[in-house]
Length: 133
Image (cartoon, rainbow, N blue to C red; front, side, top):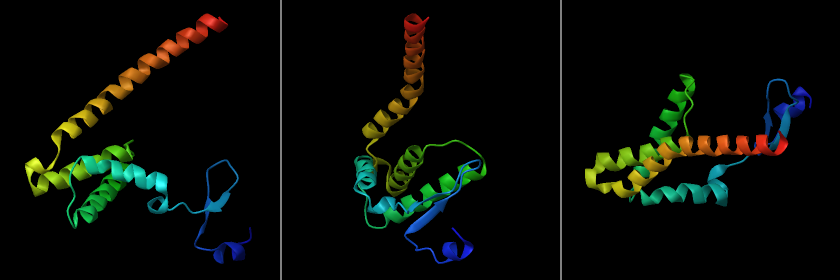
């Protein structure tokens, strides 16, 4: 593409640059318009029953958390940041507004994920060694 073509490119299109690779040209993905991503966002409704105005606060704190982590070069999960933001907003409203049972299940899942996948990876590696020597 020429510089002129890029400057007149539709706002629905996007160029993605990755070091050492050719540029990628495609359509912009607007997660808030995609059913798959909307379904993922709706799963957080089980943590806290949101009231009017809470969505803006959750989005603001999620953006701030992700931006801070990016600037500090910290690897964080968007799911964790969103969940924490929702629980924080719920707690600010009142402590019992958060469904702590659901939050506890999420934290347990987060804590167990890495050790369980490490064990499964080690078992898979041993299996591959047994089969292929």
